[in-house]
Image 1 (tube, rainbow, N blue to C red):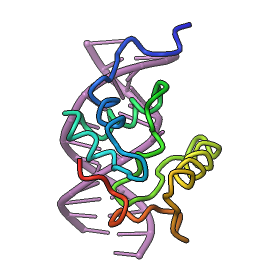
Image 2: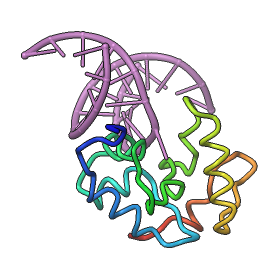
Image 3: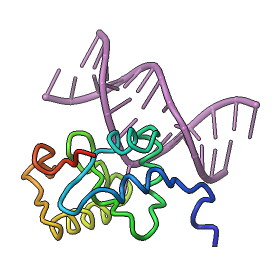
Length: 103
DNA sequence: ATAGTGACAAATG
DNA sequence: TCATTTGCCACTA
């Protein structure tokens, strides 16, 4: 039952939840909005509860830095992004110039 | 308390 | 361009 850490990254989840559909944000951007560092954002995403569109969080380059330990998650994020109207480029990254949220 | 790791980012060689 | 290093913060052993 202790799957979720007692440390609610409320600020981080709030920033991620504030990302509108069809838009994406980088870990660094979320970190700035949440007042935390990109590292902490990544760690918070590992325990992202329901209601948090973690799939809208991508790397600063638009790449899906995910998938290093869970290839399934990368495919899941790719599917979720496509479902929101965010197709990935041939490089496998998101067009930040078009889909990056302002904040 | 210490060391190692991590869904990052920017700088450096 | 690629690989390496450093900074940052939180968690696990």
